[in-house]
Amino acid sequence: MAYNSFPYLCIFLPLCWAAWALLPQRYRPAALLGGSLLFYWLMAGGYTVWLLLAAALTWALGLALGRLQDLQAATVPGLEKTARKAAKQQFTALQKGMVAVGVAGLLGLLVGLKYLPFLARFLNALLTRLPLGWQVTVPSFVQPVGLSFFTLMAMSYLFDVRRGTTRPAAHYWQVLLYLSFWPHVVEGPFDRWAQVSPTLLDPPKPDYRAFTFGVQRILWGMMKKLIIADRANMYVKAVFDDWTKYSGGAVVVATLLYTLQLYAEFSGCMDMVLGAAQCFGVPLAENFRQPFFARSVSDFWRRWHITLGAWLREYLFQPVIVSKPMMQFGKWCRTRFGAALGRSLPVWAGLLLTWLAIGIWHGAGWLYVVYGLYYFLLQWLGEVTEPALLRLCPALPQWRTRRWYRLWQMARTFVLVNLGMLIFRSNGARAALEMLASLRRPYAGSLLIKLDVQDLWVLGIGALVLLGVDLLHERGISIRESLARKPLPLRWAVYCGGMLAVMIFGAYGDNYDPAAFIYAQF
Amino acid sequence: MHTIEEIMNILSEVKPDLTVAPDEELVRTGVLDSVDIMSVVMALAEEFDLEISPLDLKEENFHTANAILALVNRLDD
Image 1 (tube, each protein chain N blue to C red):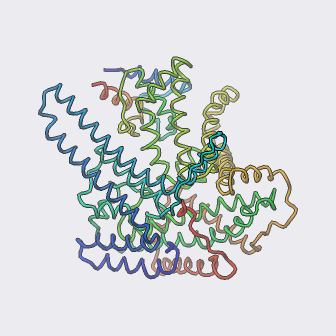
Image 2 (tube, rainbow over the protein chains, first blue to last red):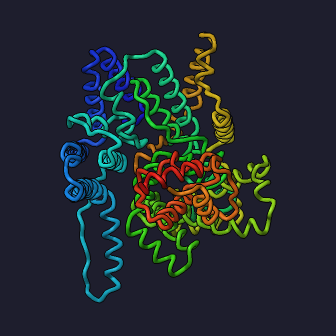
Image 3 (cartoon, chains in turn purple, blue):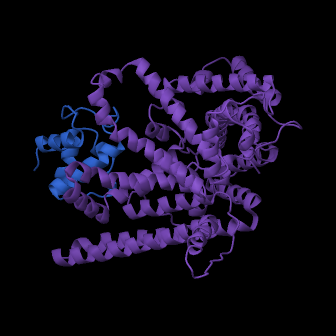
């Protein structure tokens, strides 16, 4: 049951909202939990058991961590100094052990269901080089939908409870609702317990403004998905799935259209899920912030899939950098390579790990390793060439404040991101290299592949509308707030126009191949 | 108690071209990015023998040189 499907939009969502709004306030969380479990079961069937198990482990460990913290707060302050230090160390070790068990369980689930076949293939490739004749066989599991999302959200819950930034949930159903909440279980965003639990567990009254804003956002997401993404998919699929036939201009157009497709689809999906959650008064985290106005690749990743980057920065990159082994590695580097390099090497090691994690999170394969390495290399090259650039061009700091230079930075970032998209969409690392090499060869055939001129017009206008909306948002203008202040007939004209646009220009019917949501596969 | 001069020295070691006032915004203006902040963290831990936890890595602890000084003094207590 996809977020843009008829059963979801016309049956599931209205029924859930009606149940949520009509039930007494204390039973509203039950409506959300019932809806979430039904939605997940319809998507995953029997594999729902993995979600139930992950929630059980997370809840039990969170509760145990909270109890330990309470016990520590009640007993340790009254002890004399030496005993206090010893008790504190014991409590810390116990809590770290519990978090380690939770992370091992959740990572074990993620690795076992998502990465095991890839790891086995890698190990077997290594073993074939040895004269032992050994090979490893592993069972192949079906990856349940949303696995990469709910396991990471469960881990963030345990980390936050351990850090004391949030209190643990008292009941199992509360953690289950947090992890299974249907708007974010399939494609994210990675929401934090502290952010969503107040409105999930103690829902606000139905609110006309929140409801209308939510419906508007769902409609906007539908327009992006059906008018732009699914139409661009036709061209992208034809070229990337049969890449040996195409070169030059066809590959350039396919790459640009894939960037447009992924942005329209993923941000459109986020509009649909954030809009749905807003109807229920639940504020989910924003996942996009005008990414094509980014002036560097690291800036791009602060604007694209924001919650994945934030998760990895907060729970992987930063803890790794301040960990004792990394501090010791830093000391070792300083004695060998001097102060400057000694400080930057551990940071770059942490960044390499983080970019690899971003790559591998998207899928089990070498292509995703290459994808992560590509962004690491871009960031690293940007940093190490900075002093030389400043020496070569002393006016650079002044240029950076100028409008023309900012536009140049945006254009440069756009090109680099598109190259990354080509790698990301290609059918393997080898195909990516061949497609990059094919850019030098001109393409003799027609550039109208699977799409006609009218389709390209719709895509071009759609891209301009997306750019215009992003430009307004970049300038701090809220379109929905502005629309809400307009007279009723004008507002309804806009809503009807949006619905008509989806019906007339939406890419569905016999001539189109409806595409599944890309991030739902991760 | 540490001094603002010690913090300014560390900032200029990590970012040699940096010239900022003690109350000048460092993070939101993009003067320090996440890589620079982690280099500052490594330098602070080494210079003042501090144990910095992930919880200390909040924007408000690094948004000005004075904020970094406050963090160092708090961790050193």
